[in-house]
Length: 224
Image 1: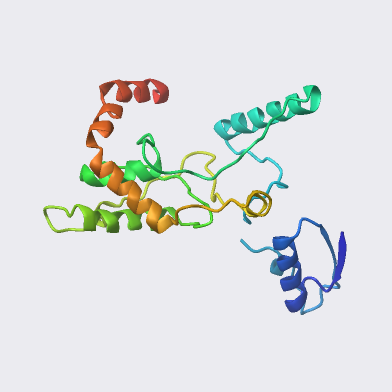
Image 2: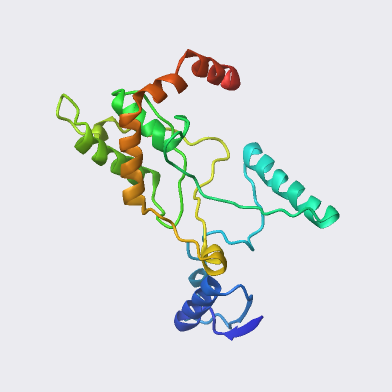
């Protein structure tokens, strides 16, 4: 633990934030809070999650995920079961079920006008959902232009957020990089373009998973 004096001021707050971003060691801040001290200096944007952050699920779905992690951890500490727990941000790529943001946006754009839902996506290439959708539309405009000449972006519609939905997903993967030397093989720009191309080239797979059987399952799950 380190002690910082004047940590709510201009230089002090920058030091505190930089320290916390690069070290797991906690900080105690002592500040008289004169005209030059402002606690808001120490409250930047909902930071990326590290392995030291506590679980704070906001929906029954996320709570069930947290419970599973705790159950696995308990078996390790009680019985010595060798386990590893990993937490990732939203993934995308081939074979992703088309109820999620990226494949849903691709398929809805191709189907011209079907309304979609939005889900927060994060990672080292953190993007707002709207930026992700606009990127997808730009690639689709290049790969498969609409017959009417309009951009896919003309189909964008805003929808109401889900109950208990999370405002941001952000993963801090420094520990994984430092201890295992892991680096992503793709950037967001290269990975998302390959993903769009895969969905365009695999319409048969899309047709199978969006068949009547899948729609009936969705209707049963979300009927009210």
